Amino acid sequence: MADETKKIVMGGDFLRARAVGEGDPTLFFVHGFADGMDVWDGVVGELEDLGRRIVVEQRGHGFSAGPDGPYAWEDLGRDLIAVADALGVGRMVLVGHGLGGLACLEAALQAPDRVERLVLIGTATEADAEQENWCREVVKAGRMNALQGIAHAIFGPMSRKEVDGVAGPLIELAKCMETLRAAPTTARMSAISAPTLLLRGEKDPAHGQSLADALPAATLETLAGQGHFPHKKDPGAVAAAIRKFVAA
Image (cartoon, rainbow, N blue to C red):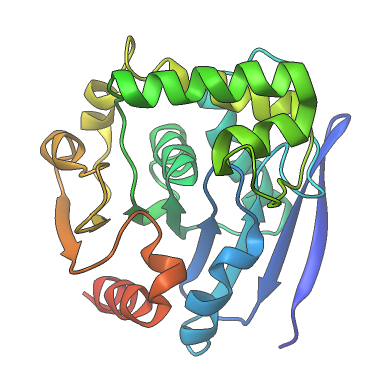
C-alpha cells in the first residue's frame, strides 16, 4: 500500500498524518519538538511488514496548524485521539520521541482502552534547571524573531538550520515543556497500565528512570553509544526493539 497523506480537520485547525501499510497492529509515530514526520522514515521503513504505520505531524509543526494558546498537556493527547478517530483506528501502539512521547502518555491517560502499548524514546516527565532555561530561551527568541529565533535558540545563532512550522504554537509548546521543572507530570503516569518500553540513548541526559519507576508496566532499555535521537542515528536498532516489544 502506498503512502497516503491526510489532513485531519479539528474545528478550525488541522493536523497532517501519513499512513502506510495495513493490518494489525496499528502503530502511531509522534515526533519531538521542532522535528518533523521525516525523522521516522528509517524506523517506519524497517517495519514495513509490521501492520499499519501512521506518522503524525504535531500541532504547530510543518503543515499542521495550531490554535492560540495557552496549551495544556491534555491537548496533545486529544490531538492523537482525534487523528485515530478520523482514520478509523480503534486500538493502537503509540511510539513517541521527546515531546511526542509526552503526547502519547496523555493519550494513554485519556483513552486507556485504546492504547495497547507505548514506546517512548528520550521522554522525560520532569526537567532540571538547565532544561527549564533552554525552554525559556526558545520562548524568548521565538517572541523576538519568530521561526528564525526558535531555530537560532535550538541550533545556535550561526546555524543555517531552519524550523518548519508556525511560531505561535511552537512557543506555546515550549512554554508547556518549561513547566516540567515546577510541575512535573511523573506522578500522574502511575495510572497508565499499558505495557511500556522506555528507550534511552546511553548519552542522553533524559534518562527516564523516574518515569520507569512511575509506570506500573514499564521496561527501561539503554541503547549503547546513542544520544537523544537514536531513531535518527540507528533506526534499525530502534525498529528491532519495537518489533520485539510488540511481538511480546
